[in-house]
Length: 267
Image 1: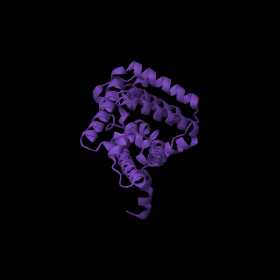
Image 2: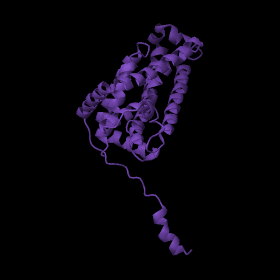
Image 3: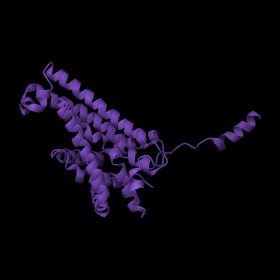
Image 4: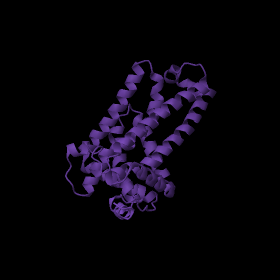
């Protein structure tokens, strides 16, 4: 075969580059609209929402209980703070419910539960690994922040006495941890808020999904910061009563996140 023949055949066998989809400009009004649409989806398919909310809540309770009763209670606070980091992937089933409701497709438990592995691109599990990695990094950072601020003091005091937070060391720990945690959460949020539902919805690779998500977040930073504040605020409140509030808050946020993705990315 000549070089000419090879050159002629190569375009037919090569894959076309994946283009980043067009990104719409959204406002806080679109965030409110996504929340309303998310509530409607929750009302239309409550059993799915309550199931995923209960699973997310039980997972948090079990993790906290295991840490507390294994004399590692000092990890409960950073684990609780970092728990929402895995939320975007954990909500994949809710994204699939909303997608099927919009397209008038039947809701099947088997299809919904397997949606994380049945995604169009097949790369959603890699995003789950990335989310767990971010969570582990956050836990390590939390330990380092404690060591820097409290020195050789025992970490158990953080969980057994609220007075520790009124000390200079306690306030310093909260401030430093909050700044670093917010930066870490912001990075993961920016690459996953659009990236995860996009992997479920379209034939794209994980890098394209992350770049698109980051670009969409930057271009719509006002609306996205507003959405992130809603997610953070409602999650904190929902986690306070032993994670039980997540039974209702998690499906609401999951369904709404899908509709926000639909508002940002053009079909």
